[in-house]
Image (cartoon, rainbow, N blue to C red; front, side, top):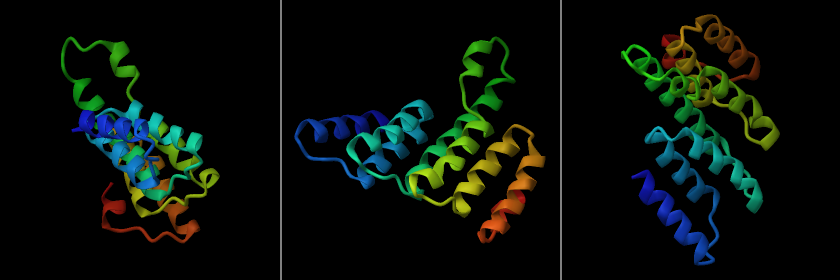
Length: 152
């Protein structure tokens, strides 16, 4: 589906129909769901070229793609014969955290979904101390953790 989403996105741009925050986010989500985190991140970065400001949903879609790709990385690392270079280019909790940290610069505020996705990425890579720290940051920001936040 991600190929179809990008094709429609490209056709829309060629037809002088300007993409919006919603269409960008839909394309980002499609790429993220397919494990194409690089494309998702590229689309997020490309929004500024058209003076489109990403919102929390746009950022969360990219953070989620990193978390999902991290999950795939941890599953692949247990398979014999995996190329170590291929595994190193996959994102992990650190990229998800970097993206969430850049949200205030883009005028979006990390929400419970942002924190939850980063904490799941931390859990996937065994970085539970950071996940616990993020619970404290959520509290300081006035973001109320939900059950998923505690189970990550």
